[in-house]
Image (cartoon, rainbow, N blue to C red):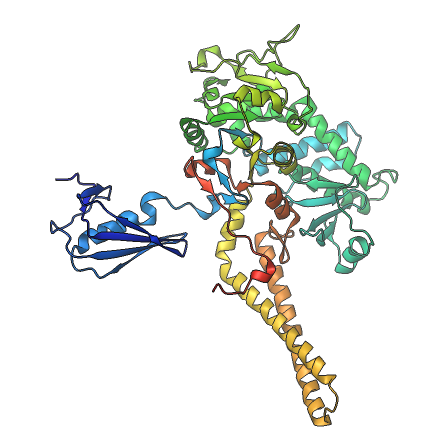
Length: 592
């Protein structure tokens, strides 16, 4: 008798498989003349042997496998078990739509020998309501106490949900812009006051040369950490407009932004932000129990893993111990999290770290003390966390694991990387992590977009609404075509007055209908975007066009997903393939 988890398959079974709605008649699998056993799930079945010919067609789709049975004469129970064995859920667990990994460029994980990670906002996802609020209030304190801004700023509050990534700050005019992939400004605010369409066009549309929006007069809000400073900038713009004299006239909008940036830098330099986080990481950082299994999976597959962060060792150790380490005793941190990485580089000064010509020195860090070992007069780094030697777990650490500074050339040598395309780097910053590593080095890249989880869930929930919107837009185009045909007909010679009157009457009807459809479409589109975010709308769209942020994601990220641990939901040898590219002329043309 076979084991309970298997059933015999006779030679009379043939399986033809169609992948993704494309039938492959040559893929006929004839099972051996000798009965073999397949790992079917255990379920009761009759002892009757299969007789006669049976042809099974397995139709593979993205979400399920459908098996159509033809000419079954007997052995239906075996057929049923084969159907169950081939079912989608038996070999590939369904992934929640918000945790899927999306592919812009083909990437075969079998070709990847090393996977690297950024720390802040990649492995460590900070809580906006606590961490960004902390950054906001510390920045205000610097503005008031160091830069002599009015003390009433200390009573201001922060809304962590107001700003979104992908916005552009017009420092000169005090405006905040959201634009599409063609750099058309769709939404614009002066402080917190929305600009009218006329003001938008007058300011950003009537130019002979297209503004690239990336010069010194503009600031890009492309990281989650920059949301707090963007919100504070908008508050200061409003404050200056409403309170003449409280901020000197000589301080224009650009100076306001410069002061905000200086205040943020002061917070980083004096360590107040990181000191606060280090005292209670759980208050500021989201826990993700799936990170360690994901790292183990990658290492078990034979791949090297590395960490490259701009944070120094003391803070890196606190954060990574919270995410990947053992339990903390008496406020002390251990070093056992290092077992999940081959190389850890702190104080990397990205994005300059990725430049080939970077000749920065690489220093080895002694994890227990924080001391830089290869210096003439090395001394312990000021420690954020309290490292207890008694908590150290004996792990098989590789020699020279933790470093500070250096460049990508050092990293390639440490990991014995032969080709840059063998590296997959995961980060959250399009310019600091993704663009440089992709464009300069040719590394494969994955962008972490936490906002994506909610975005795709809403897209699914609103799919019928979006379908109605597409129908309405198509109707508007159809009416416009009819009006064009009528106008052409009215230009024909020898039309009698009666016919002309009928055509004009019909044209008036169509004009009225089109205006109603246009207004309905406009209102529905506005409501759709407000369901995603008020006032900025859908993260990846601006009207019907991809947003500037979406355009950057498409250009620079091979893969993108909502959280780093989603890598652990798929096979370590996964071959990521994007959907087929279409140009506009290809839509609506049926396949022959």
